[in-house]
Structures are given as C-alpha cells and as structure tokens.
Amino acid sequence: MTPILKKSPDVILVDDHQIFRQGLKSILSLNNIANIIGEASNGIEFLEILTHLKPQLVLMDIDMPHMNGMEATKEALEQIPDLKIIAFTMFSDEEYYYKMIEGGVKGFILKTCGIDELEIAIQSVLSGENYFSNELLRNIIKNLGRSQNGNTSEHEKLTRREIDILQNICLGLTNDEISQKLFISPKTVKSHKSNLLEKTVCKNTPSLILFAIKNKLVNI
Image (tube, rainbow, N blue to C red):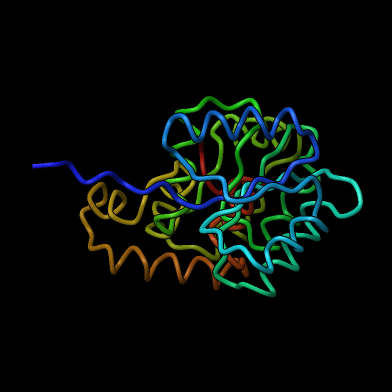
C-alpha cells in the first residue's frame, strides 16, 4: 500500500533580507515543512500579495522598512481574522512583543532557532496552539527579574487551581497535556483558561503568558 504523504502547509515569508528568505525557503522546502507560496520584503508588499494568495500561515519579520511587522499584522488580520501569523524576532525586538501579541500573532520564534524548533512552532500554531521560543521566554524572564517583586494584587485575583493552570500554560503545555498532568478534563482546563483571560483582561494566550511573567505569577 502506497503511503499517504502529508501535504506541507502553504506559507508566506515576510522579511527584508533576501538571503535570509532564500535560506529559510530552502530549509522549509527541502525538509517538507512548508510550501512557500509567496515572499515579501516589507508589510506593503505582503498585503499586496495577500489579496490573491491564500496562505495557511505567515512567517513575519518585525523590523522592516516602509511598513513593519506590527502594522502588517494588524491590517492582514482585519482582512483575514483567522490568519495564523508567527513573528520572527531578535532579542532587540523585545519592546515590540506586547504590541505584536495584542495585534494577534500566534507565536514568536527567534531567527537563530534550529530547524526542529521551527517545525514544532509551525505545527503548534497550525493545530490551534500558541508557540513561544523557550530562549525568548528566558530572556524576558531575565529582564523582568531585574524589577521589583511581583504584583500581589494580581495573585489575589486568581485561585490556586488557576495559578496551576497558568504555570503549565507558560511551560508550553497543551490543554490535553495539562488535563492529564492535573487529572482534570480538557473542558475544565478550557474553562479555567477562559477565567484567566477574563480576570487578567488579556486578549489571548500569548498575552496571558507575558502578563504572568511580568507580574511574577509563575515560576519558569
């Protein structure tokens, strides 16, 4: 019986460095991780090709000329609300993390990441999860660790179980993995997650993760 080959997802690359795009395109294609259907060197070019291409995922640089990743993400999601976008970033882009997350990106990966992590990030986001580079999270934690103690009032808002759920979300576990670890149903995990978003006034899981780290609600 002939095996059924998994079709690679259709992806658009957006980055202002042509050599980086060419290298990434080769890696993704040769490893059957993604089918690159379009490329753009800035947000304006990206929005132009988005009018006639239908990607399943966009890999978006943040710092670009003419129109940066934040503006491009915002406009793209206004056109296609369910479009999945992963931000390509460097440590120096940290000031933009919150804005990109609030804008609707589903994940962050460092440009220095390996092929295995890149594949995991793409698969995670396409399956409906969010993805944060572990190295990126450690850098955020290190920088925030220079600040004062966490916000006690934020701790008081949450129950012990909600903090347990939040801890595991920040560790990158899926709803099913959290349910198995804590011996509760996936439905209960989703309910706790909804309560966490409401109590912290966060729009999505990535913003919830940064909120938790910023207020030292979890230990990672």
